[in-house]
Length: 102
Image (tube, rainbow, N blue to C red; front, top):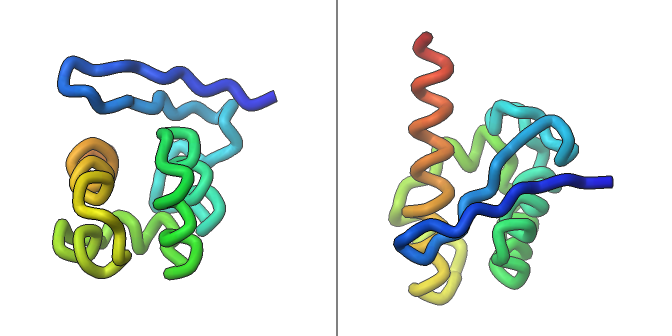
């Protein structure tokens, strides 16, 4: 059984607490394409998750994405694309940089 803790934040975003119980490696750099897809599905972006699968975005690719890549490269609606970048991609990048530098 997959166990994911969803956390509602004051800004309206939903944080997904990652653990080894959710079937993904803890480091996003190790995620396969389906790990990325499932991450966004779990975060409530079912429709947008398909774009990550179609573009074959794995964890390493996800960590390299810029704001512009998310807003224009995936051909997503602007609202969800902004939320995906600001509340998910950027924090995952920051967390990865901090863990890889320590």
